[in-house]
Length: 487
Image 1 (tube, helix red, strand yellow):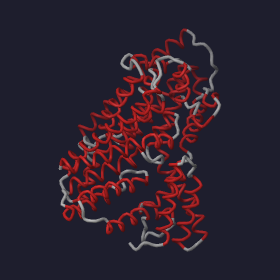
Image 2 (cartoon, one colour):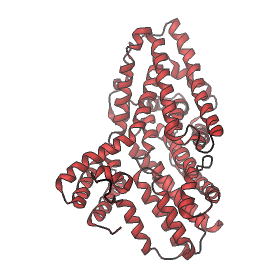
Image 3 (cartoon, rainbow, N blue to C red):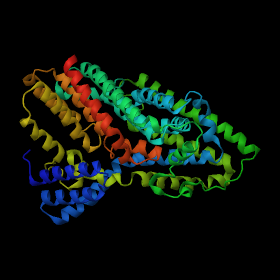
């Protein structure tokens, strides 16, 4: 597609957003204004520009609402369990393994990686953040450190290889015209190199911030985890609506009972998801959105049980209050992500039709992908430059926040440029895949599924992306160099 003025405006606004993020400035206004100008220039109508601003936010909200919803149910459940004391009882056994914050960091990474390999990070995040993150924080790990660990291990290292389900390498391999198994094996190696490098650097940068268990610092971090410290809101904003009375004998029994029921139920969820994965074939299990929906539905019924235990029929009347608090928290943490995601959705032809109000038969521009595709002609035919060029393509296409949208482009460029550069197309495809997923899958983009990790941990998605940036970029550079040396 021929580049238009709208394409260059999109590129300029993208550059402004990146610079603003680096300098820790707000990016909501640039994205709203950018959406308006791009649409206005492309359609030649100022009315079309205003319409696109609303449509972009609406499309983004629809795409992200599933994350908002599962966060709402999980936060409501956890808040209801606090009134029974079940939250502390639940993590007591796990804390035995997490003897301190240093051990907790690596235990959290190990569990996150294994669970995410089987059914992707999206459904894994609420499980991990509900059961493991509180234990890690009580052991002395900062909340931001826990969020970094979950993001790097799940959204980064596990999803970048997708070695169990192999959906990601299949997309890359198909676009590159190579065998999926080869790309899967190479992406596994590269994802581990990138992930372990990033994990080590992140640990080195924050190990001095790790506190002793049960210290004052730990209590402050637990306040943040409960959502009370995020955004500078008052502590009572997330307080439960039921009266805060000292648990009686019956409530104490219910508290202990739910401390057993909830983890066992979640374990049952994991077992069911894994069993359907093996019995249903490669794509027959409850993974991705289906897995998240399954967990959300189970959480809703656990919420009913917890409220009934707290106050009988009167307690059931309070469920709406818990859900409201859950929505307030999720929107407070993630609300600013919607206009940003809306702007970057203009980069993909999957969304531009709805955003720009184009007809069914009209050509759908993909401003980001068109720019990247046009840039391939200026990349010199050199092995090193081609490899890093494909990595850069993966990183740039990952800016749309999906992680998957750029796989086809990175894969097709790998297949087209491999012979001239004297490299194996599968190697380039694996490099592009790891770059795309680590960026938009995501660890570097605040408007990706990274918002779910940030939301459950009560931290800023933008600050989390900044913490991940340097470790991940160093890991990606190192894995690309090693790929050239190994293959």
